[in-house]
Amino acid sequence: MTGWTADQIPDQQGRVAVVTGATSGLGLVTATELARHGAHVVLAVRNTGAGDEVARRIGGDVEVRELDLASLGSVREFAAKLTADHATVDLLVNNAGVVLLGPRRTSADGLELQLATNMLGHFALTGLLLATLSAAASARVVSLSSITHKRAHLDFDDLMSERDYRASPAYGRSKLATTLFGLELDRRLRATSSPVISVLAHPGLTRTNLTPRAWEHRGRLGRVIARGGLLVTQSVEQGTLPQLLAATGPDVRGGQFFGPSGLGETRGRVVEARLGPEARDPAVARRLWTAAEKLTGVSYL
Image (cartoon, rainbow, N blue to C red; front, side):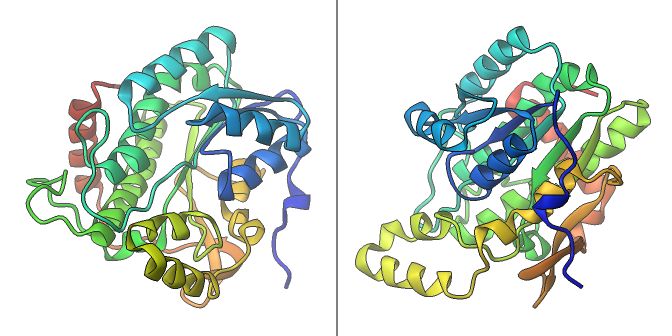
């Protein structure tokens, strides 16, 4: 059984799709496939110069807009300009993320950088775009999780990892937070009979530039480790399929979670993936939601 492929993406003509982190890796492939199938794609990127180059390579109906998810001011500015120019948004792919294996770093707002970028920035962005998403006939929000969320645990007394910072567990917590957000968003959307659905995906172990960047702090040794790690990954085209299915599959339901099927969900054809134990707890999700509203200043639903 070969499974679902990008060739099965339905026609996206007339749809506006926003993809964060679209200049490389999973975001680049996602944006490329959406544009190839007719969508108007907004590349939401930190580096607009790189975004312009990617837009030229992709072709199709593509525009570039600046967005730094580690700055809540940038998120608000992006959302305000986008909603002024687009009456509806049909798809928001919360793809961008960082993996940091060095010392603890903070965002422009003083928040732990991995949580700020991977979850809180997207929480704020989604809330600020929700009215524009709701104006579309059948909009979707796709959030990018990771298999690392299954081993993670949120400490609400130290969400910013100030007391005991370890980079790899902090990344896992950021992805657990992302997963909880995506699921709780769907519960709240359904409770209000919203036409928007929230779906999740994870790429398994996929060959992107996040792994080399994560090891930059270790210099030459880090480059060796990164090259070794890339040997066990699947192609970025294969790794992007879960989020493309989540974004475009005609039979996708809110709250579904897609990922690879093989070798502990690290590679292979796309299937419905398994959630970690803490991600399945609505009480944890509600507590995180309250914290996220306070940290970002964005309230919705």
